[in-house]
Length: 567
Image 1 (cartoon, one colour):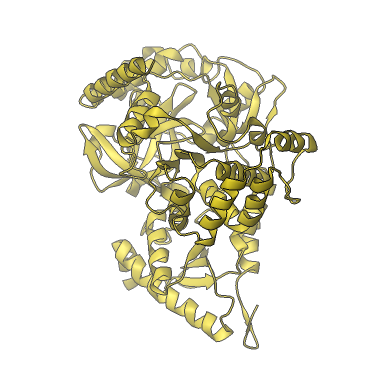
Image 2 (tube, helix red, strand yellow):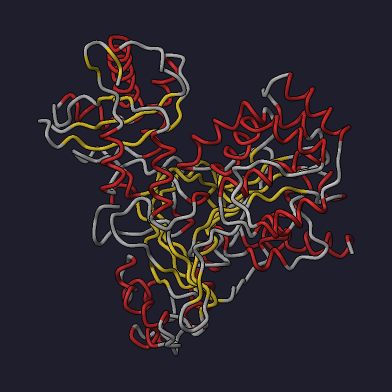
């Protein structure tokens, strides 16, 4: 069996190598396959897909689009009409997380995958090469659970979030390859599911890799262990689940408890490990841990940094880059690069808008082989599930080339750019600048978001920042810290973005200001956003606050001083 898989991997690697040297023809071929597949749909007839014979004709006929272009079509698909955007019937409607928009959540139709290339084999080959132990065993922890927000529409089609879309298929795997029992994956309470995943992980010292959708879930996992290790160790010793705060169906708890065996020896091992502290705890708990797989680029980089004290030198690996709309990129460098991706031209046709034109309603686009190293672009994709020249909003930066394919990193979202005076401050620039400012004062950054101060003239950026510990500081010290952080932030923004420096010299923007917020503010923000219908595991704190409830929370939790006291 293994030899057969290895042969398939090698064949796939050879084909990919050949394809990567003829990207122009591959891209056009992929586009024409997509258009041919959907030429008889209502949408395909509207834009004469059957008559399009090359890239140039497609670009002349079809405009660049955003979600509102498809909204009425998707509603009709949701209501049960067929052959609208795609000839394939949707099997799932993915709800967007909606954390960066004041608009309602989007519905993304997901059809049965039409894959023109076996990407999973390519990733598997890269993992086997980087981590030979994985060839022999796949013992792993999967930190995923049902979100309780999924339902079926009037036509019996599942509606939910992409983070748990594959859960039904995962549950069918036999033998079941994950440490946690299947019952844990059906628990909808986030903290309970995280606790139980941690509990079962601690029981087994032989885990080879940890897999989760987002870096935020990995951080929550380790924080849960740090907060609850004493209770977990005692329960492992006795073979019970006794934590009263867990929100769990009594029948599930009884079933799980019935199957747990007391492990006094493992409990004793864990006790000594935890008493030695939490630095590099991951490799002490699981000596053979090879890597942690999760989405870690772009806005998630701040959470990766928070994981480092726990995981030490264990590499974090973002194997794929994608979204509700599907796969956009793959990472073939596990163990070397956390989140460097190659595009997937065999899977979808992708164009790229230069960063300088992302605010234009009619931007120019470049082909995948025309991108320049060091430049940033917005991704525009065409896919068989019914999106054509669709601006997904992600910003990538080209860092190198692999044959004719650009190697890029995800740097943020086009909607989170700070752009008062056309200086184009990206999310990546903002994150780096505030990180450097906080580190210069020897503090630990928990999270942050930004707003524009429209009441100031000229306008300025406000950075609302939560640090790990400043509860002992006086009002005077808080004020001094905010001023120092503002000075450091200003300096770093000028380093990160020369256009920002120019606009400051021209007095088109006023000096950026840092305001500290109460500890726990961003934890509350997650809870508020989750209450709006988004699973906690899928929530990313928006780097530019737009939602009224988030703005209200941030403003109410800004640290102020009264009579010399911090409030």
